[in-house]
Image (cartoon, rainbow, N blue to C red; front, side, top):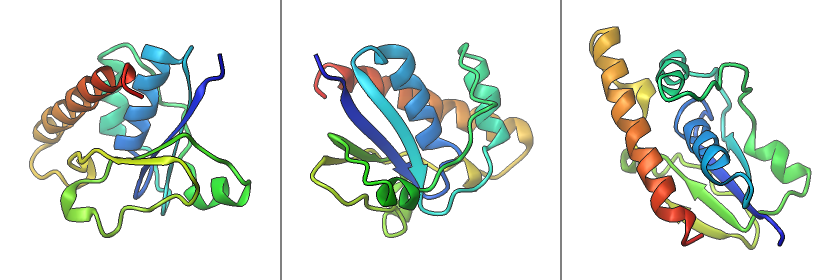
Length: 141
């Protein structure tokens, strides 16, 4: 059986798309070939690295990647999932191709306000929402 190819996309590929990629690889990597990318790749968000380690997933060595590089390489996906929040939907990149497009809106950890602890708590909430969505969709993708 061929693995379905999935691309998670957000603006910077520093948080939500990285978490989505990591969860799908962990939970169903035998069924899916998974990548993530961003419109303007940034630096991996340290809060995201921390909260993923809390659930036993180390993404600290991940690099952020450009959706344009994947496009130039001619990559094709069965599913392209944007994970930008609704307020950023205009900035959320669209990957060309025939793949089915899905949108899962999650808050952007880089926009959280408050102390480090407050921002980590909010990032945990996003992590948990992403994990739940991945689990919910594994059987339907």
